[in-house]
Image (tube, rainbow, N blue to C red; front, side):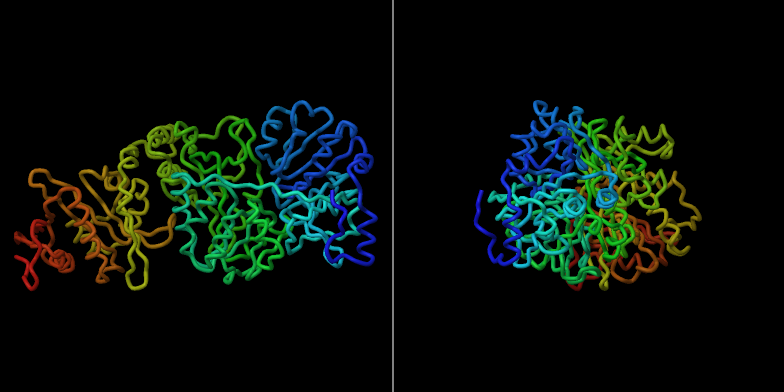
Length: 636
């Protein structure tokens, strides 16, 4: 222990400070048997006071400890010490997980935004609050440092407040101060805060990070937690501009974005210029970063996690993890079957807040498999005992390493197909068969495994046309609804030129073979506008190899509003490159003689074009073996 007075403290504040100093033996005598003791959260766990509980706890008989989440040591949950201790957690961290599932500790599921109200209401009486704070300033105010969450409310609600004043606790800013007059007893310490370093992102986390980055536009405000996947997401945001942060918690990854000029908070519509959070956990680099940093404000979690307040951030993107999701969109995030693993936390708070934000996106992320790829996380139904944290009515964007889907407003068939489309290919047919049994999808739905295994991601790319970004990618089996909408958007003339007939309908039976291809003998490239999960198809081109002459039969159509803007020519050139990679010697097609726009696209492709007119139809062959010479007119 150190007796040196806090720097700058003087006068009556110093007298108050000195009058409240205690040693651990004093604290043992102060805490009565049967007390309910609140313990500060995360990296702000008051380690000296906790160690006192471990060493002297048996003299404080039958007491209960409550906490949000612990990052430090919690050996008081071990079996050998379980009798004099009763642990109650509002979120299950790794160090209490075993105790909770063995019945030696309790878990109280509750929305994080409601926890402060729960403590203020007196429904959960707090006899003693053990908190850790930074040394007081000249006016006697102590910062709660790296964890405000429910600590501030616990300190305000407890009958007795015992503060461990740690010289190494950062002085953070915001609604995060407690005055010496509101502290009953002080124990001094000088110990480093517990460090937390997430594992380096693996390939799956990195791909999820890439996918999520597509959903974050410049100027968005983000909420991302801590862990392997959140860190991977942050790493893929380095090409963004003017991002803001309104989050529950954060770690070291945010520092890199601030230093790179990516996180400026300049376009936030609430707390402009500020990072808003309720706690942080990370390395000493993080604790140094938040120390007396006016860029960052810490607030209690009934403020940071209030869905209505979150919604005041335009373009709010919330990113939360799931353990399982079923084919209807129910998300389990707190247990593995009957085994309690985490907690409700702030997931629902931020999902609902982002959903109500102007331009907001609530995002659920999860790897497609668990147990080294042997178990699918997208499941026909949640495991026995698994709890629904986020309901199917709340879920919108779901992201795995295999893609992005948006379930909001989608019917059960669309949801099931969309989720199967981002599941691991090894499990897609199994999931599809179950969906058929439950009549979630059409009984004649074609298998999805082949498309999933051979999907050529390398052909995904974007291009700008008159300031509009168009995304080109191979067609997917889940594009059926989108292609159906595209068909019904076409004029009769465009339909006639494409199908040589004025088709009036495009039912499931006709569409399904068009979106289910194996990418080895045939290819279809779609052109999409809009954001991932909410795209609109504006063009499609396809070809199929004919091994009798090694030419591929090609057909494509561009939406009426996008014709004469270069999309058709671009699509043709893209298809030529892919066909050459697949071993085609050229293209062949039948084009109506009065379809001048399509004929023009063929003759601009840069390869010799041979055409033969017969009964109003041109039979066209494009030879890849030779390029047209400059100034040479294609053959007709």
